[in-house]
Amino acid sequence: MRRDFERTILVTGGAGFIGTNFIEGLARRRPRLRIIDLDALTYAAHPESFERQRAMDNVIPVQGDICDAALAADLLARYEVTGVIHFAAESHVDNSIADPVKFVRTNVSGTAALLEAAYRCWSKADCLQTARFHHISTDEVFGSLGAEGLFTEDSPYAPTSPYSASKAAADLLVAAYIKTFGLNATISHASNNFGPWQHDEKFIPTVIRRCLAREAIPLYGTGENVRDWIWVEDHCRAVETIFFEAAPASRYIVSAENERTNLQIARSICRIFDELRPWPGHRHEELIAHVADRPGHDFRYASCSGRLRRTLGWRPTGSFEERLRETVAWYVSRRGAALPASGPQTDPAHSKNGR
Ligand SMILES: NC(=O)c1ccc[n+]([C@@H]2O[C@H](COP(=O)([O-])OP(=O)(O)OC[C@H]3O[C@@H](n4cnc5c(N)ncnc54)[C@H](O)[C@@H]3O)[C@@H](O)[C@H]2O)c1
Image: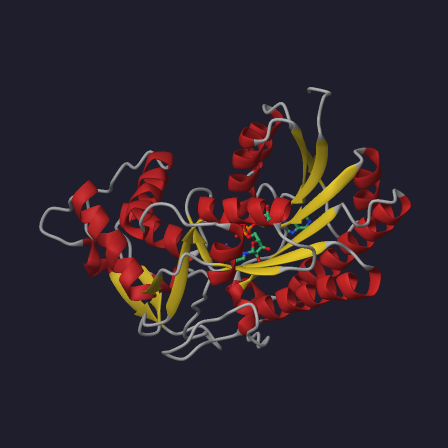
């Protein structure tokens, strides 16, 4: 481990989907930044990410719970941390319907523990104005849209699932620490991410996995629900820009403005498979199977990232279709992709459908 670091930051949840991508990019782009990754390695984490981080000069992975206030305080003081980027969360809406209290513990109490540790440490070190806490939120805190309109940073909060309610509560705690204690914090609300390292339980990896296995692709309800998709690396660059450049107490929506219905996404992936791995006599679309809708399923999320583009010059890179292809290629190569010889096996009851 090198010793000439300019600064140390704590990233939470850096072994999850977005955190893994974030730390790999940030560590490469900023070799003089030391990054502590605090992750509990829940079922959603990639233990492999810790292995990869151990091989990096400027990343220290630490297995631990964000609800453990003493651990957070110790890490902040021991490594003289002057920045926190907080990704760690329970993130799957279906799981929040099955076990809401777990989401309150991690997403609300965990965020409170981190905020308190950061406030106390930075007050003591007299760096409350310069040290920064960046909180990763979601567009889901704004609830569901009808066919028209876009979320902006000024949209009212109207969360509908235990997941989005717990994220909204965490956002309000961050806002309270800004107002009450003068914490230098920022918040970003990202739309649906896709790309490498996403957990199998989420929608796009599920469709890819089912195409690979030629098994039924479960689609909630009619499949007409609309999501706004962003390439994970574009989100990561936005977070980096906001963390280093945004004004204190600012809030940004992070969206590439790619609205697609779930049915369109499933069909696009099926078409990519038709080209990449033709299935003689069939089209992968035949695998799509509509299943009972998720309770309280939000109809449409769509956000406007005008503030981020205008004030910080952020832009998404590449087209949605190119990025989707890259994503499919990543999962196919990771899975070794041996294809079954037989036809489709339909078992939608045993499938999950993500964000
Ligand atoms: N995935 C998306 O499309 C999306 C969109 C907008 C916002 N977000 C937000 O981005 C963040 C990261 O999302 P993701 O998709 O990478 O999630 P993920 O579920 O893939 O990863 C979450 C990570 O947090 C860790 N974690 C969970 N509980 C913890 C605890 N108590 N202590 C320490 N670590 C813990 C897990 O081990 C895992 O590594 C979340 O805050 C989520 O709400 C995600």
